[in-house]
Image (cartoon, rainbow, N blue to C red; front, side):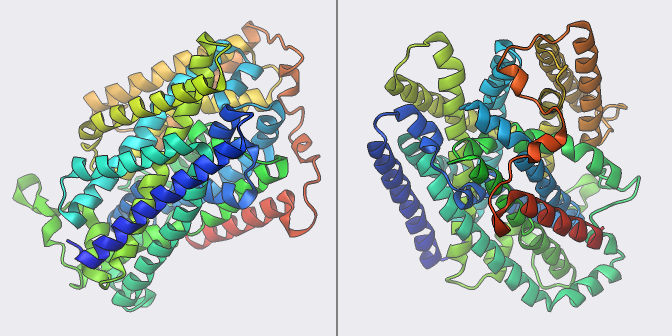
Length: 550
């Protein structure tokens, strides 16, 4: 367990975030009494690009990433770093093609956008799926990772520690709204990055540098751990083509069509801020490979060279053979490698990831529940009632997410478990958004049926794969399964659109690109802050890095 000084640093950090969140949220609401709902859910559309970019990163990078990416670095090397770098390509798509419609249509939620482009039924279904995915993916998995960390570091029962941190986060999220969430997320991003960098530097120095790590991997005949692009038949189940085909399906849903993420963009001051914010986040997404994944790889090399004691993580595997339960590798590194005094900063970074993920998800749930569910049945509801309904929904969702923890803890790898679930949720949503934005002929009936049938197919395939893991379906890597489901949904919606022709109204007829180049007509800011220049720069950097670590 960590010492009393480091524990004090961590506790003071949590209390400081609570105070900042409450102060920011309450002050912002007092200054925006005329439009309470917009002020609470969308920060009064006042967010600028630095805050949007930092908040996007903080909402994405949770305790799950710190813990599970280190675990994946230990288990498979740099492989899962592809998820981080591929995200930058998807953020470029968000900035160039999706943001203009979201801002122009003036929507408060993405389900609201689907109603404007398709129909009410599509909106209802996406609202339901978005709330469910926020509970499972953004809250429950974060609580699971956070519980593992806090139990190891403080010796407190997992559920006790998680409930305490979550209640504190829920308080300032429910009271302060999006403004409180974004301000605290910006602070937490800085703390999280600082803590992760400290871990990377310490692990690097303990190993003796890059060359010494490569030498250890060479001795163990595991130089493939340095490669992100794996060949066909790789034991990881993620060959290069599975990543290239499957990730865009997951990434477009996660970064371009998931309320929890995109809500920061919807609160932007204007279109330029909304476009540059995601691109700024794309540049920050370069860092996780070096500060989240590589520490796990260094931990593996340190373990193999006898400089890291993993005896506390070893359990009996098949045939009585000892295996390392790598879920706790990051916390073990904090205990064994980080000097006293700095460990508190690392714990604060972990708590930052946990709190920012929970706060972002709860805020998006409250927005969806108010605008897409409560307001439908109470169209004349006052702003006060909308805000109250959102707060109640956030509280209920928090309780449900706690009840899911024992079930999700059955996954051997937290990161793979997270993406396994996304792979079966994302395909129909990615399909209806892509076709809706890029094809005039995508009809409302086709979108509705694709969401229904595609979601049912995803659930069916997921359940069957778990009940019959040795079956043909059970052995398909989750990334390829995402691609196959997407192709099925794509063919389904195109076929249905040809049968049930689109019937546009005046508004929906403006919510698609007649040509992809049409999205670039807005000149944007002059100089280095221009979204076109930043997109090309980010694209070039990511292609170069991907080639270097292929």
